[in-house]
Image (cartoon, rainbow, N blue to C red):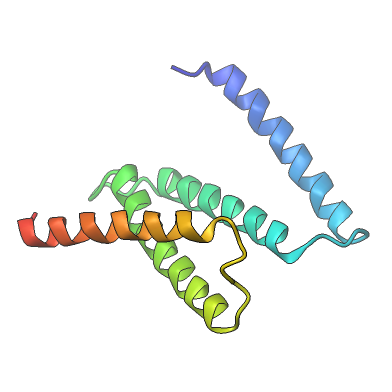
Length: 118
């Protein structure tokens, strides 16, 4: 289990670092994919924090996180399709086969879930 004081220290450090990154972004060109990765990570953290802080009594924070993660996965999948259609993603990108494998495994599990009726 994480020590609350140690976690608090880490939160303070990452908050300071994010503030510095925000300042630096105004004066330095950064690639769009790198910015998109940062955005995704910050969005995920924001979603997690929202779920924890909302304290919805009708469902657990974890259930809220899962629902929000599904919505984000849908958004990312839609953007990937657009990137493929716009030839922003090509066969030359090494991660394309890994992405395909990940999607195939995910689709397989979704089909199994839907068939189970759970």
